[in-house]
Image (cartoon, rainbow, N blue to C red; front, side):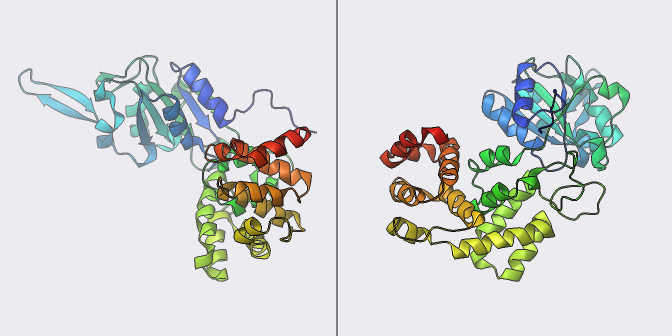
Amino acid sequence: MATLNFGKTVTLKQAANIIMSTPMNRYFLQGEPGIGKSSLLSTLSASLPNHEVAYIDVPNMDLGDIAMPVIDRETKTTAYYPNSRFKIHLGKPVITMLDEYSKGADPIKNMLHPMLEVKPRLADLFLHDESITFLTGNLGSDGVGDSLKAHSRNRIIPLHVSKPTASEWLEWAVNNNIEGLVMAWVDQFPHAMASYLDEGQDTNPYIYNPKKMQTAFVSPRSLERVSNIVRVRDKLDTDSLICAMTGAVGEAASRDMQAFVEYQDQTPTWESIIKNPKTVAVPDSAGACSVVVFGAITRITKDTIAPFMDYLSRFEPEWQATFAINVAKNPQKQGIAFSSNAFKQWVLKNEDLL
């Protein structure tokens, strides 16, 4: 039985909508490591193209990186000017992300604190009225050194951002050049995207767990890193590949992912599928089927989608639907699919699967 959320958490998409709907508020996005909180800056920037963008890496800042006093010799006074990285001097609305604010040193947080006010200011300059400022950090239970004082918490609105589920991550992955083999692995191991806060995850070998000593674990961030490794596996020997994958996602995920690399070696080549779609072998195992389907999403062209649809028709219906749904969500590939007669005929014939 699914656990009811009742507004305890929000997705990244929901968080972006909240921030854009009420830009006068200061939201603090909290979530476990590597789930994509920082990616919200690019999401907001794409939705608000007339805004400047300022990424502020709070824990790595010194006082001089924020503002400096400037002497006016005529009036014999000083003014406090903010650093140009904040883009305030341009006179345009700015989307400012105070990344990992809750890990910053107290003097740095104090200097940035006026940006949390209703009328936000940095040094002696006020931000444009349409500016957006938000903060990111980890949950207290993550145990990675986050802290905020009461007067700061009273000026912000915390939003607990949930870790994406496997299906949510796959929707993102098909649009962001993630290696098909890695997508196939997540499709078959959806519990790798569980949260340590979920019930019954104490023995989950893949995920971040603050109660355990870990050098690596599976997260959206580490999956993107391991995708870069898996993509060039033909240049690496087996030991090098496993060692690199282990460094990215941990030993348990690395060993299981290696099995998918072997699935890839056992499946027909892309060239043979396109050349002989009606006779080339169809994989028997779910893992191999997943590798073929998610790999095809990244590889199809207007010239290859028709023969691939012929090949796909020999798969179980669930795999056919998996391909159709995910290719339709991919902005780079959906045009190829929707302009293909073979794909359109499949959709008409299999509407009940979608």
